[in-house]
View 1 (cartoon, chains in turn cyan, yellow):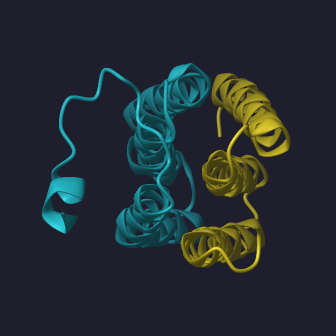
View 2 (cartoon, chains in turn purple, yellow):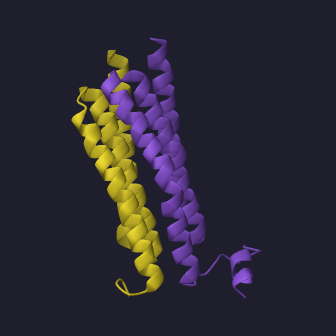
View 3 (cartoon, chains in turn purple, green):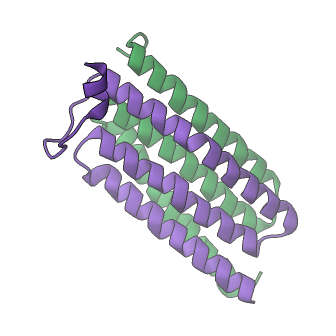
Length: 108
Length: 92
C-alpha cells in the first residue's frame, strides 16, 4: 500500500514536471532555452514517472523501467549537447536577454 | 493493483498523451528546424513513458521492450538530425 502511494506520487510529480517542460517548449524565447526546457522533461519528468512505475509494477516491468531510465540518463546529455551545438554553429539567434556567449568568444 | 491506482494511472496515461500531442504540434509548427528536432525528441520520449504506463496498467512487459526501442530511436534521431542541420547538407 505504501509502495503504491509512493509510486503514484512519483508518477504525478513526473507528469507535472513533463507538463511544465512542454509548456516551456512553447513559452521560451529562443531555441537554446527551448532545448533546456526539453531536457528537463526527459531528465526529471520521465525519470520520476519511470521510478514511480517501478514501485507499482511487477519485477520484470520494474527492471525495464530502471533500464530505460538509466538509458535516458546516459543519452539525454549527448542528444541535447548535439542539438545545442548544431544551433550555435548554425548561428541560431539568441534572445536579447542573453548577456554572455562564451563559446562564440572562444571561437573568436 | 488497487482500483484507485489503476484509475490514477489511466489519468496519467491520458495526461502524457496530451503532452505528446502538444509536442507533435511543435514538430508541425516549428518555427525553426531545431525546434522540430527537440519536439521530435520529446515526443518519442513521452511516447516511451506512455508505453511504460500502459505496460504497468496491463502487466505486460513487452510494451516496455517497445518503449526501450523508442528511447534508443529518439536518441539516434536527435543526434543524426542535429549533425545534419549543423553540416547543412540534408535538411537545407
